[in-house]
Image (cartoon, rainbow, N blue to C red; front, side, top):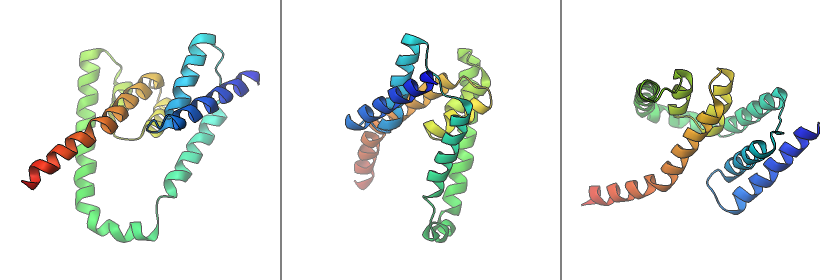
Amino acid sequence: MDKIIYTLLVAGIGGIIGIKLKIPAGALIGAMISVAIYNIVTGKGDIPINMKILAQIVVGGMIGLNFKMETLYELKNLIVPALILVFGLTFFSICLGFIISKFTGLDLVTALFSTSPGGITDMTLIANEYGAETPKVALMHLMRLITVITVLPIVINLLARYVKR
């Protein structure tokens, strides 16, 4: 029980630090990094499977809260772009997963979850259920998230200026 309490305490401290430093998804990333360091240094990190299931339930509930009646009304205007997005991202994610697996030796399940367009929390939790190497999936999504948050706004700004001309 002490291992669980210490792990959650370290996660809480890391999450607060991530928020205070204004890191994107700071609570998640701060908790993940702090627990990773704690577990690497001590080997005593532990969170039982029941808590992982609880985390999935909480994340599912939080995602569900984003939907309102207006969301359903907007759906008719978004159906074509959504279909293009879903099929395009799925196709390219699967292709990238196969390429990464083929050329890097990363197992296919881990590569596919690493290239999926979902969020870091969701993909890491689901990847764990399918036997993927969750630390690698989390790191790949963390690198993607950092890149998207830092590089994409600059690219979008440049493209928006170019298109206006």
